[in-house]
Amino acid sequence: MHEIVTISIGECGNNIGAQFWRDCCTQSNLFVSGHYLDPQVPPPSHLFEEQIGSRFVPRAILLDSDPGTLSNIRNSDLGFIFSPGAYISGSYGAGNSFGTGCYDPDLLELIQEPLQNQIRIQVEKCDQTPNFKLFHSLGGGTGSGTTAFVLMHLQEEYQTSISNCSVLPEPDACVVSPYNCILGLNYLIEYSNAVQCVDNGYLMGKLKDVGKIINQYISSQLIDMFMLEKQWIPKYDEDAEYDQKHFYHSETMWKGEIVTSCPVSDTCAKAIQEIEFGNTKLYNSGVTQSIKQQLDRFDLMFKRKAFVYGHSKCMDEFEYVEASERAHELLEIYENGEDSTLTTD
Ligand SMILES: Nc1nc2c(ncn2[C@@H]2O[C@H](COP(=O)(O)OP(=O)(O)OP(=O)(O)O)[C@@H](O)[C@H]2O)c(=O)[nH]1
Ligand SMILES: [Mg+2]
Image (cartoon, rainbow, N blue to C red):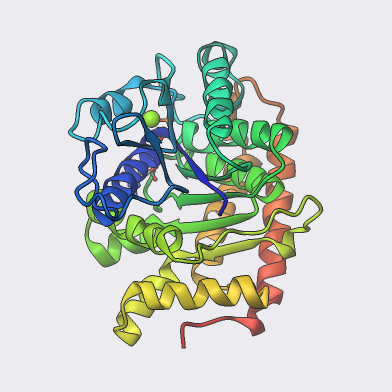
C-alpha cells in the first residue's frame, strides 16, 4: 500500500491538518505523544512512521508563511507528535495575496529549501513513492498561492498521485478572496489528480460554526477515506484533461448523512467506490455554484482592475486572464455533465 504524506498549508490547512492527525491518533489507539495503547494493533503504516522506542510519527509536513498557527500547534498537546523538521514557516503571512504566497522571493528564500528537503526526507522514509494529500484554503494568500508553489514542485519531482482538500471561501471572506480562489483553482486544474472541495459558506450556514466543528466534520470525511481498508487514491495521470479530473464536494456527503441518516462513512465509501471503480465523476451543483459565485466576483473586480495593483505583486496580469478562462471552461464542462449527476441515493 502506498504511504500518504500530508502537507498542511496556511492557517486553514493547518487547522484541518491538526484535527485530522488528532483523529487519526484516536482511531489508531495512539496517544497524541505518538505512543500506542494496544501493542497488538499497531497504527497504520501508510500514515505513521515507526521510530525507535515504539513511537509513531505522522507522515506530515506543516507549512505556513506566517509562524503563528504553527506555533499554536507546536505548543498544543499535539505538538510533540510531529517531527521537529516537519514545521516550516516564513516570518510573516502572505497578506491574502496569491502572488505573495506563490512567488514572493523573500518568502521562498525562507521556505523553499527546508520544504523541498522535508518532502525528500518523507519520501525516502516510504517503501514506494507516496501519494500526497494537501490541506488548504483557496481564500487565503498562503492557502492558494503557496499551495500552487508546492503543487508545481511535487509535479516536477515526483510523478505520483496528488489530491487536495480545498476550502472554498465563504461569500463574506476577504474582498480579494475571489482572486485567490480562481488563481489557485487554475493550479489545481493543472496539477492535482482530485480535489475535494469544502464549501465554507454552506457548512457555516448548516453547522453555525466557523472553525472547529467544520474542521471536525471535514476531518471525519478524510478519516473515512484514509482509514478505509481499501483507501481511495485518485489515479495519477499525466495527460488527464479537465473532464477526467475529479472535483467533488463535501456537501454531498453531508447531505447524504442528513437525507439518508446513514453514517457518513457508508455514504462516503459508496461515493468513493463509484469514483474508483466506475471511473465516475461526482458532479454536484453545489460546488459549481460556489465556484461560479467566486468567478463572477473575480470577473467583476478584474474588469475594473479593482485591487489588482496591491494584489498582483510578483505576478503577471496575464495569469488572471488565463485563470478566469480556465475556470469558465471547467464550469462549462461540469454544467454540460449535469445529467450524469451522481447522488447519494
Ligand atoms: N473551515 C475552515 N476554514 C478556515 C479556517 N481558518 C481559516 N479558514 C478560511 O480560510 C480562508 C482564509 O484563509 P487562511 O487559511 O486563513 O489564509 P492563509 O492560507 O493562512 O493565507 P494568508 O493568511 O493570506 O497568508 C477564509 O475563507 C476562512 O474562513 C479553519 O480553521 N477552518
Ligand atoms: Mg495566514
